[in-house]
Image (cartoon, rainbow over all chains, first blue to last red; front, side, top):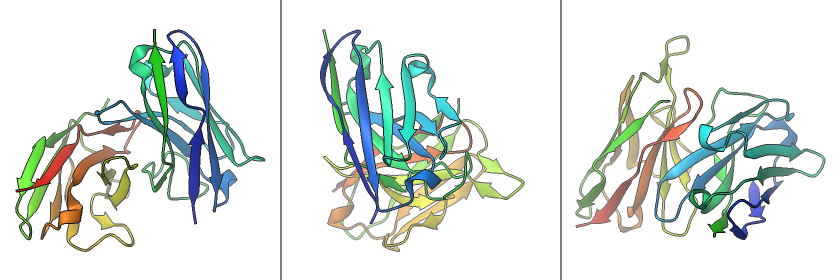
Length: 124
Length: 113
């Protein structure tokens, strides 16, 4: 069955960097676009970024553009989110999420499977 | 950006009664080329990730009880739970995947009356 396991969260100071990972299993990772979605404590869901199956195409939400970088290593079945210049309002649970259709891009970008999330706390 | 506005923000319904949650989009999310509405519904229980309930505005995911249904087109959408069960207590979100940035509604908290 599909499994997505995020890691790399923790407490970090304002302005510092952190890299999140999402280890995927149970499906052909290299065939699916992937996403990062975050949720601040007690708040709603916010889409962050997406990457195509081969890693050649990426889109970002405006508030993280230029600070966050989504990437993937298909040989390791792992998705990444490099987060730089972290701010207090980046504090959230970060989820990786998988789309339902293989070999598609910007077609059906809803989230069929989610990881359990990893908490990032940005503190001064 | 497409803004999704859910109503109400919270809702209390008696067990066995109908619950209705609305989601209004700031622009049409219906692609006329394929006649599909690019809207999904999720359920999130405390301490858990969201769970996909419905895609394409009205297609229920495998394993989702048939008391959950989605309807609507264009800019106005509805999630209906026909007979509320105790396990349906959760926050519900709509999401548009018509265009980036993909956006969610603010959420509707559903409780038992």
